[in-house]
Amino acid sequence: MRPKNRVAILLSKINTTQNKIVMKTMLLCLFLSISFAFVSEKTGWLEIDWKIIFIPALLVLQIIIIGTALKNRYKKH
Image (cartoon, rainbow, N blue to C red; front, top):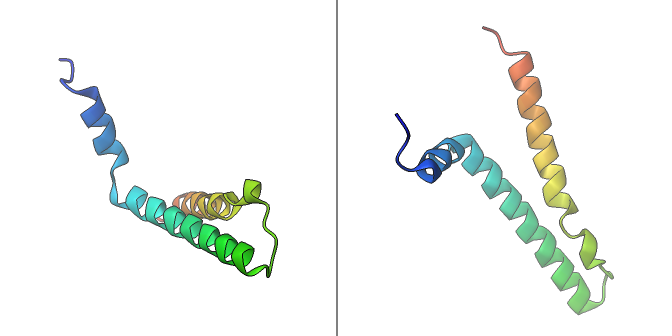
């Protein structure tokens, strides 16, 4: 039996509580990075290279992935 809507099935697998938390955390980190860079650029306090503005969000994602992997590895069955 073929699923009627593959996109709906894929989205239901992606749209979990854990994934929502990760996405909100990354968006918050990205928002804070952009806000800090914008304010720093306008005040002249710090000169920001806009090419590296996504690095904090990627670091947060890596920390979440590594933390989840370690938690799953040492989970008691």
